[in-house]
Image (tube, rainbow, N blue to C red; front, side, top):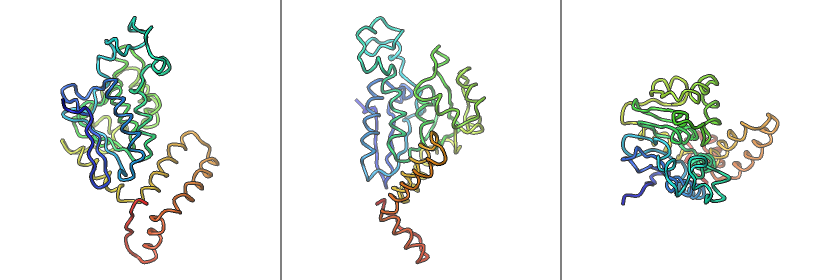
Length: 272
């Protein structure tokens, strides 16, 4: 059987590919758990400086596989009589690793870039929104699909949406389940870079490679600061920045950057 997740590393860029093209990369419980463990491991791999998340075939990710809603091995609370045998883990977190993956994307503490072609719906939309930047081609379709099935949004969608687009747009999407075509999604800020058909992955990898050549410790600390600043006061942000600045100043890249400035040349960062 083909692996459900593919991983390739080139020039500091790790490309994570959901590999269920026959199911439009719909995510099963086991696939979501595998992705969570992969991202947890990538956090500690120094040779991986940036990450690109994409899907095989003609979809980014169409959301949770229907087996999650109809199966009995991993019952969804309220939909199955098998709930009495549900694990303690799922009782506390009904969506389990489906929702945990968005947390892992943020917690990896490295830039994560989404390359979107075709549907990014439901949980798939959440994974795209959790990334640092989204590249998409004209085939992209974005949707809060849960509402179309009678469920409220999960996997962090209600957190990310109003931080990336206007509040009325976020409310419209979670209330109607409307499908946004690529141009509309780009217009409201859910897609950052709209590229020609078939070029989303290459464009995302070029962007990720440029970041990988940079001072990655400082970049990662800056990323951490931006995420933390969403929940802090200005004074708290000043304190966090002071700590991060001190940490970055101890790196070889900081010394290389300042030396290159004095010598009037381009710095050669090593990610150390």
